[in-house]
Amino acid sequence: MKLLNRLFALVVGLAVIAVAVVLAAEVVADRLGRHPVVVNWAATYQWAHRTTWNAGTVRFICVVLCLLGLALLVAQLAPRRPARLTTGSADPATNAAYTRRGVAQAIRTAVTAVDGVQHTAVAVGRRRIRVGTQTAAREPSVASSMRDTITQAAQRRLDALELRQPPRLAVRISTKEK
Image (cartoon, helix red, strand yellow):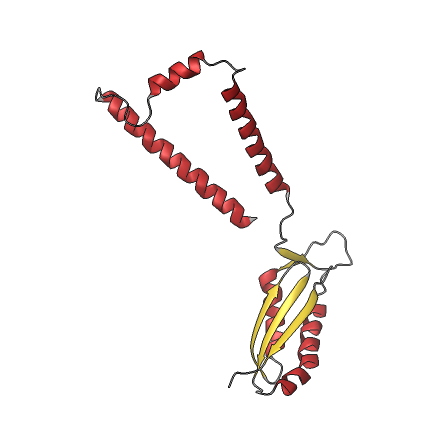
């Protein structure tokens, strides 16, 4: 949703800039006694003056604008990805949470501390935490035997965070390339 909002803001910003440039050019041209440069304002004014609210083009423009507004409303009502993961607390008045980046860093630190783990990448989603590790071992059998140790380390750290709705762990292990 963040990307959609940014793209929409870019389009609206560029449209406002374009209208401002055209308006400035038209004002300068009018002050210099020239004919309209980009938009024939007199013809547009005459069209608006003789067109009634019941005209087909006016209704079409209104329908398009209503549909655009409805689409923007639906886009904003879509649930957003939570930025924080709340912690469980005995006191209902307490509201504490971890950021996704903080949870990822905590799990990355715990997994990296396991012997034989060379590199760790952690992605925290709404329902799942993906842990990707690269071991120093070159044989897949050694790497697969480390799976339990790595998963337990990540799960212990996740349990220590005491999240209200902890995401599931998904651990992927790869070996060091030759």
